[in-house]
Length: 318
Image 1 (cartoon, rainbow, N blue to C red):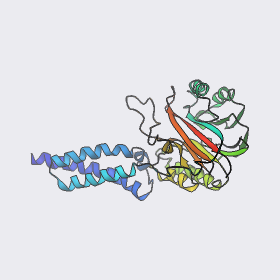
Image 2: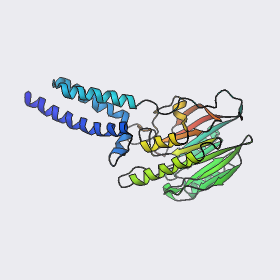
Image 3: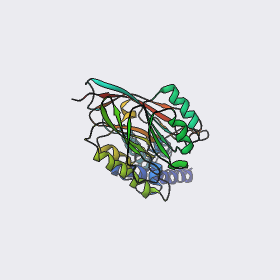
Image 4: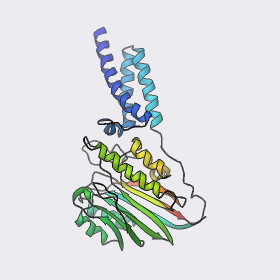
């Protein structure tokens, strides 16, 4: 029996060391190196093995391990809370126009026609589409009078569609397309940026950090230039320091967090028996003239991402 307790304690200790390393990076505010960025996507789910470790430690009568697991569980719960401001400064002023914004990843263009059906049903004013190849762009562009895009095959193509007049802007220098544009809505200029940095794959973590840094710097440059929308597949959750830096740099607000859809997972959809576990698709709003009325994650067949539909109000000048 004693030998079994020692074996259980060693196993629990090894598991807690790994979880502590990941949670410690979240506490310190760094993404570190592989496998930490990948494991940070699971942060709230790390509570499950921590609870199991706590129970095993208690059964093995190991007070040190039990105390360690209890502290680790409390820290994980603390950092699983919503991140960022709980409201925008635009609330309470007259509404110039409502805006419906849709962000969707069509997985190498495979879900193009399924997304088109969603667009016809939901009628968004602005659509941000990632992994949209030329055939996808031709199909979806027929539904809107205005577009801005980075043409590319596979995952590199990106498309912004608009029911409002649109002026294309420069794309960010990234591996996958991140176009920019300005939409003219109710006499106001709304600055748009599609987000699609590289995922934090082993060997690509430095590229992922750099491209999230490009989004951060771009948001900071336009932080005081009027309404701002940054939307798409960020390949990052709020537990990644590089994503939190994007929120912090330009006073951006996470629409899903404001609408009560905090931590609603958007990826990976259709990955066997497992449900989605990470919210990596985001619509971020900035400026003093946009407020969030609601957000819904929509299932779209033939893609590994859920789409995000956000309802906004564009407010009049002060």
